[in-house]
Each structure stands twice: as C-alpha cells, then as structure tokens.
Length: 106
Image 1 (tube, helix red, strand yellow):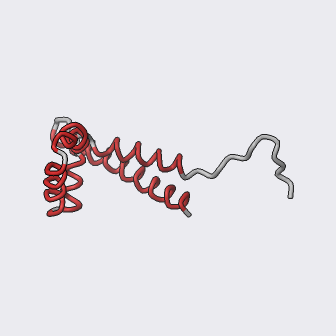
Image 2 (image 1 turned 120 degrees about the horizontal axis):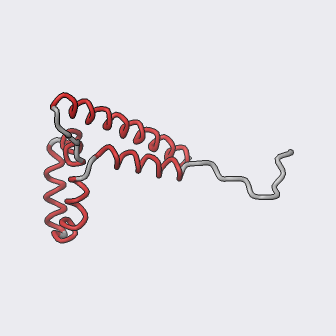
C-alpha cells in the first residue's frame, strides 16, 4: 500500500514538474526573458492566506534555520524540485527485486 502511494505521488509530482517546465517556458517565450516559478509562488497560489502565516510561524520558531534552509528552498525553482521529488518517490515505490538464485517457477 505504501509503495502504491509513493508511486502515485511520484507520478503526480513528475507530471507537475513537466507542466511547470512547459509553463515557465511559455512565459519566458512570451516575455522575451527567462522567468521561473519559485516554490513560494506555487505555495501562495495553492494556499493563499496560509502561506504567509506558515512563513511567519517558521521565522518565529527558528530564525537562523529559516535563513539557512527555508528561504533558499522557497526561492528555488519549483519544476526541478517537483521532478526530483517525483523521481525519488518513484524509486522508493518500485517493487522489490528478486534475489539471485530464486526460482520463478511455482
């Protein structure tokens, strides 16, 4: 069940990454400049009011941790992160390999 969930989420994230690449490419061609959608832009689009409160909560709890890990993550491009996370989930959800010397006959 967990493998199935990992594979489904991995495929969804892989598809979202490709859609993000196409979206960023179309925006870049239309504006004659390279435009990249960041993770914070996606979070604001999906969560609207909650994104600002989550950021304030993260900054209030550990400001140095937010500056070292949170801020660079939110400013990074969303499409490559979705692609990499999707590939990792697909890798985790793959069926186990058969061992050497096992019989396939019933």
